[in-house]
Image (tube, rainbow, N blue to C red; front, side, top):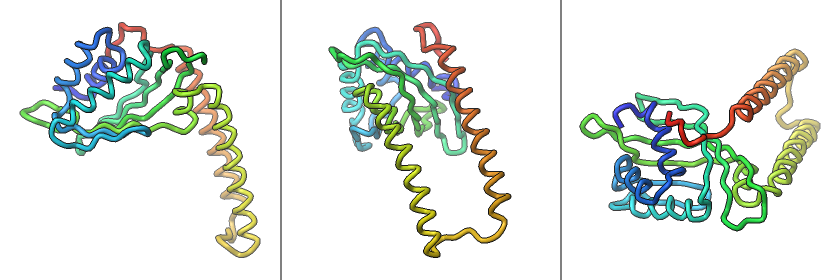
Length: 213
């Protein structure tokens, strides 16, 4: 890639939304290092010689499991100093023959680049999911249960912290009311912003096959 920040969206969509296996393989051969590494919640490819062929098999199986994948890159951040890309990605993945209605999930993709003769190649890719977003890929109806569990765990942590403070562990001393008020206001603002962000995305829709960057 000559311009990673603007080309990476097209590269990702060629891998996940290609109409043919030949186009998918051509994209991977063109933009990935031969010794590329890959990390995902369900698999790991160490960066060794010809590991690109292993990664190709993973992307091919990805398409076999879900022939139709709708993907949308919400934003791209490029750290030129470290040669790293961060992609905020939304996708709808539907396992073949699954009786469940597909559900949209969100992930963060971290890509480490390697520069060779002025061109940038993907040397390592890491996919990060929240637990409930990952469940949306496999069994969508269970995602709300995972979210409920996470919410319960958050409340339990708060209760445990208060109990520990009664015993003298990690107690806040002085100025707590003002600090807590400011923190609460900030948290409410962040939550409102996140909801507006999600609503904005849902209104815009997913990748329609024409957008490339």
